[in-house]
Image (cartoon, rainbow, N blue to C red; front, side, top):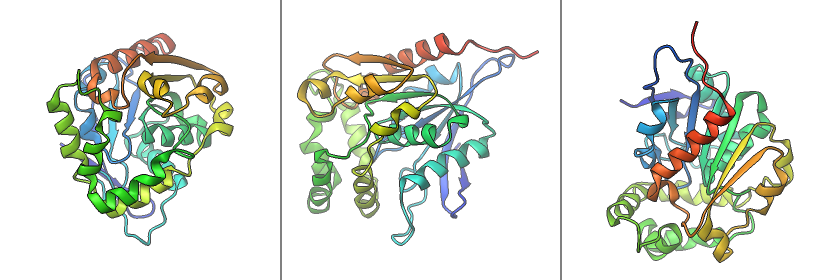
Length: 273
């Protein structure tokens, strides 16, 4: 069953909560933040493995999934997206949480950790660099508005999936989900992401960070992860050679294992008295 809460600016934000941890464990909270044009449903295959060990909260970023689409005149900026996450933590009673962010969800997670370090136990970044500033993402919206979301993504699907190795049902599910987005809102959200660059603020991230890199992005020069490797004070870098951007769709079990290995090594399980 889905849940929701109302933000301080009056928006309804949807989320899912799954917890199958042992009753005698003090389960920590793990918040999953999806990428642009996405939703909590894209994480469906990762939940079983994660929720056995953590209280897993999946939030639909405002304007995505089941969350309310903001009116065109309602301000949209990174500060507001950060507040949404902090207010979610307050709502679910999590003083601190691990934040797992994919792509744009990782940009938001980084900013939460920079602005509210006391609320973030660790960052787990999958396919998430310092932001979209300086990338060709500025060209996406005119194409989306002209062609539609699905045709645009079908034309660029090779960037997101290795079509030779990925189950075509996964690709179809991805396209079906993305097609549900409100194009008007996406035309605001993507340009906002193209202004994001956390490079200079990375040294301010105080918590342990796992950075998982889809190797195909570095091989093709699509994105540069050097800042993540060199400017975060406590970072563990893992690279999936030859893997495309949407690794959490195509390789969910591997992503779950990387997450669990990192968290269990850095945060021993706590038992209730």
